[in-house]
Length: 279
Image 1 (tube, rainbow, N blue to C red):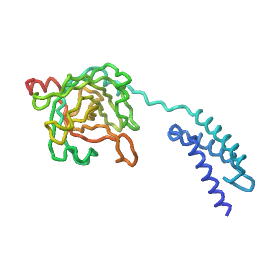
Image 2 (image 1 turned 90 degrees about the vertical axis):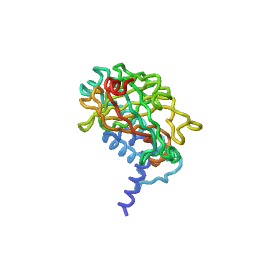
Image 3 (image 1 turned 45 degrees about the vertical axis):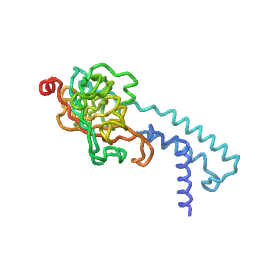
């Protein structure tokens, strides 16, 4: 009987801490177990009632206890230092030694497993285009940094730098164009591998009344991810890699910004591409 009463009291303490946002803050979850211990026992002492735990004390006493414990929880939460992102080391910093130019060969259309709207690209039509980009060594501004993906969990990342692009991408072999505005990139290192993640902002193509049917290039940022060798943009993989966009949806169980596959691309060094393509 006492054990059951004790478990109810413990559950009440945990519920209070969860609602107050004290012991279960993101900083605590990343390793401040001592703060959890202190907060737990502080709350447990605070709501101990004669004869055992009770959530049904007199209303005035309960309000005073809640206010005191909330202040204690806030004090503990504010005492925990914010976790700073891990700084780039010499390996990831090596990506910034030289600029590198590439031609991106992009092929947009419906891909297996994509979370794009079921009507998008349902006919199987696709849009092919090329875009010349340069991975510059200059640091990106805050606006560019905010648009970078945040999916490097547990690894190290270089600083975000600038992607320069031609003013327009070439569609239909150059008979059509799509305006582009450049973007940003970084090198992510983890598990013995390194990946170049970058984006290019574009005008997109018309959703309705266009010449590509039920497929179009979404307006905004196109995101690219490609393996890099030697932790540098001067040696990117030649294999096909995914192109994604970020859109709001429910596919992960709650409404949030999702990554949705819209096509594939290959990257070829600019000097090689110009020699082969003759432009």
